[in-house]
Each structure stands twice: as structure tokens, then as C-alpha cells.
Length: 634
Image (cartoon, helix red, strand yellow):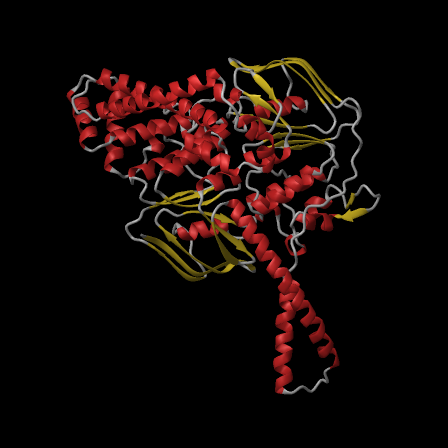
């Protein structure tokens, strides 16, 4: 089924051209990722597709029977509403029924005719699936209690609430919709991201998304559309396919550019020798020369972020944390944490939202006081702290003025200096953009400038709290290359698994209740470890399989531990027992689902069956995960 068509779309803001000739089609079941640099029109294209903005020219058509569900980056909620009221703020008969049922349930009116009527209607209208999805979504995204007012929610909680509402809407339409997601993984912890991957993989939803999470794109999407130099390039396949196709396109373009340069030199020589009075034929050749000149000057190769920084050498003492305790009331963050950082270490920090990862960074930097314990900084350490607070400025100014307020020149290791303007160019701020006001920058451009302002101070110990949020994939690649060659220490909090895998050599795993596990390896290695399986046992097996296909080289090389080998007697017995247990659990789950569909089921039986189906689903996920792990050893 044909869902939508975009033909020759163009959009600009003032003199800034976002795109000039975007064309592609969307078919039912397509899962499309849009890729482009910050400020090149990804969100604008989503807004046009969702009907919230118009193009300057071109045509867009969306099937009239297909509803559009749009998760925007920023969401404005009515602060007077509770979380539950906002979630169920939809005009749909099933939602009205669930509101009535939930209200009677909450008020304890389970022995009234109204409740009996609501129960019967829930069954008649097949509303239990939506009710079950509603509770699962709220639980998985760890939203605050349903009676919480939306005006007191943090930015991350609002984003998760908006995502929950979008997923619930998709469920109402039985996933037969056009689902548009703008950075859906922002403010989600890794467990939530993997759950979302599994949800989108099992749905038949037609999807268009923008994301910087490459594992997420690999797991969910089957088509990538890149916007570059105002044009669109379509790639069928995963992120690796896109990289290969792009490399080939750049190679071809470089070859063509070489030919164009040869022609340009020849034609330039002809232009210089021509007399002032030219024939019509000469005029035609002159026009052709200007076309070639334009192509040659526009086709500049993208450079990497290469900065030979002048950095103070780290001494023997860098950062010591001794017997550190920290808690907020009943919430324990650290309990006797001990660690001495060594020169050149690259440590990643992972864990669920709310376990204290950002607090740990602030304690390490001495920006927040621990309840007890010692924090010792080495005398030669210069910290560069990239916080989630974003770019800060006291008064409105232009980009170049902001950088020059720190220094006019940036010192390099060889004793030379580069100007503030040249430094900006290395961070993809061309001269024409350097005079843009800070307030006019996109979210990703502000994050890029924030990173620049930190590196301008020549730190030798980088402390990065979610540095990948809002950065485009091209900038992420440049940042990864830079950090891989950074000679100092790196302490990194990130939910971007690909980014983490490329940069860290071991992890601090925050498991909650002040339990911090030090794991020697990157995230993918930890993800497949026995410790992970025993600690986090609710991941969907489909997500596991997808991840295995896209793990980076570093993981594939390190996975020699799980090479095929002879199973031990204990492992064989465990494998046989799992194979016997899986059909039994699947049958019990099917029986419970059938039980919940009965119209005359008493409330206490409904509650008992609902609880048990959750336990069975979790046990199934754990056993499937263990079955997969053992089968890969065989």
C-alpha cells in the first residue's frame, strides 16, 4: 500500500536553503531514518510531512485513510493535567472507555453496576489489549505516578510522556498509521531504548524517524535517506550499507571533481586570454566556465576534526575517590565507592535513569559535595566538563563573539596558534555562519558550540554527560575520531551504545541502591555477559538478535570467549530443560490471554491473571535469552 509521496520539495529560511529537490516515496511497512547535518532540514521535513509546515515548492501527498502520529522534540503540555489525563487526552471511544474503567477502579467502585457494565464493554470492544499496552508503556518508560501534574515534570520526563502517548495512539490504530519520531531515544536509558527497539520491530507501523543512535537505526530501520547539499540520497539497508554507499558516492564525486578541476584550469586559461569583444560562441563557453567554477568551489571534501592540542601532561596523581558515600533521603547513590583513576583511562558510565550517574560526575568534579569520603584532584589535571545543562551565555551575542570572549587564539602542541574563526571552521561553523546569533542556532549546533568552548580551554581530563544528544551523525563521527586520539582521560555518561563501544575500555555500571559494578570491557561485551543476563532479564530476544548483527569490530574481536565449543554437561542439561519449558510457558501465556478476554471474569481473577501474565512474559524473555546464548556456543 502506498502511504505518501514527496516530490521535488524545497524549503528555505531567508537566505538559508535547507533543501531544493527532495523526492521519495513511503510504502506500508517502510521504516525510514532521515540523516543530515544539524540545521539542514530534518525537523523541517518532518513538520512538512506531518502537515505542521509548508514547503516553498514541490508536492506532498499522504493517504487520506492513514492517521499521522508525530513525536516532536519539544512538547507543550497543559500543566493543569495529570500524567494519566494527558496520556488519555485523545478523542477515541476506546480511550473514553478506559478512562471510565480506570476511574471506577481507582475510586474502589468495583462492586457497582457501573463497573460491571464497564468490564463487559471492555471485553465487547476488545479494549483489554489497549489497556494492557497502556500499563506496559507507562511501566517501561518509568513515568511518575499517574496523578502527578505535568507542570512539575523534568524535560526528560516530558519527552517520555510524549513518547508514551504516541505509542498508545499507534496501538489504538492497530499500528496502521504513519509514525513520525524526532529523536525518540533522547532522555531514555539503555534498557528503555532496547525495549522501544523491540516494540517498533514487532509492529507493522510505517515509520519515519530522526535519530543519532546508530544501533537504534540499525535495529529498527530498513531505509536511510540522507539530505546532503540540499539533495536527498536513498539507501536501502542498514547503517553500514549507508556508510558503504556514501563512501562509494564520495569516491565517484572525487573522481568527477578531479576531471572538473582539469577542465576548470584549461577554461580559466582560455578566459584570461580572451579579448573583450567575444562572439556568441564565446559567450556560451563563458557561461559553461562559470558553471564549472561553481561546481569546483562547492565540492569541498569534508574534513575531520583534527586538533593537535596543547595539553598539560597528566602527573602521577589524577583523580582519587576514597570511601565516598552519597544519598538523597532513601535514594542511595554511592556507598563506600573507591577508585583511583589512571593516566589515559576511558571509562563509560551506564545505568537506568535516576540511579545517580550525573550526580557521580558532579561529585568527581567537586561540584557537589559527597556525604562523606575524600575526592582528591591531581595538581596537573584540567577538567573539561560537558554537562546536560547545555550552552550557557549571559547576553545575546554572535557565535564568533562568544568564542573570542574566551580567547582570540587557540594554542597547538607545536607552539603555533589558530584563530577563533579557524577553530570554528574545524567544528563545521563556516565563516558565513559564525556571525549567527546564539539564539538562532539549532539544538545540535548549540551542543557543538558547547563542546568547542570546552576544548578551547585545553583540558586533559574530559568529563562528558550525554554529549551525543542532538548531534548529527556526521558530527558524532568527527567527535569519535577526535576522542579516540585524545591523549588524556575520558569519563563518559551516554545512552548511545555505538558511541560507548568505540570509546571506552571499561565501565562503571550503576545498578541502583548504591551498587556500582566495575566491568572490564565496552557496552556490547557487558551486554552479552553472564552478569548482565542475571541482573537485567527483561530484554526482548528480537532486540538481542538485531544487536548481534550490528556489533562493532571491537565487540566481534572480543567475543572469542563465545566461540563454538563443546558444551559442559551442566550447559547441555540446562539447554534441554529450557527447550522443554518454553512451549509450556508460551501455552500458559496464551491461556492467560484467553482468560482475560472472558466477559464474566470476576475482578480479583482479572487482577491475578494480569499479574501472572507479566511474570510469565518476563520468564519467557529470560529463558529465550539464555537459550540464544547457549545455542551460539554450540
